[in-house]
Length: 112
Image (cartoon, rainbow, N blue to C red; front, side, top):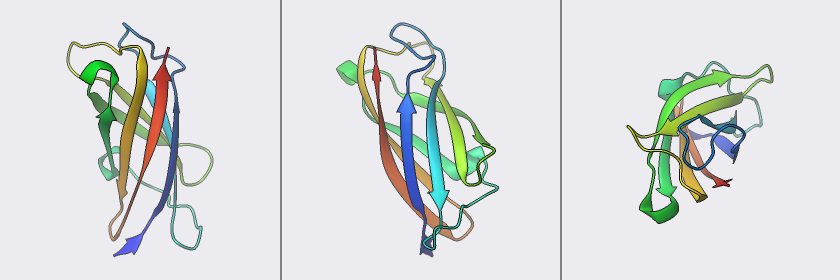
């Protein structure tokens, strides 16, 4: 098994406190040689909320789509069940696994 190089960042463009709109995490995935990893699907990503305001909202991965830039994916997450986003900082663990490779990183967003 080889290592994937994963970087991620998030911004609350649509998501905001008290709403259920999607939050987006942009994830870049390359192999150890810097070659973009293309063709990943939502099932190849795992998103877990590590820190949430007030012990708050757990997120669900809704979709993952590869952008026009090779190896860059737009991950859409929403709050769990009937909850809404809360004001404060969220930290997400982002895991990626392809057929033979794995990698992980973290991303954060300040819902304001």
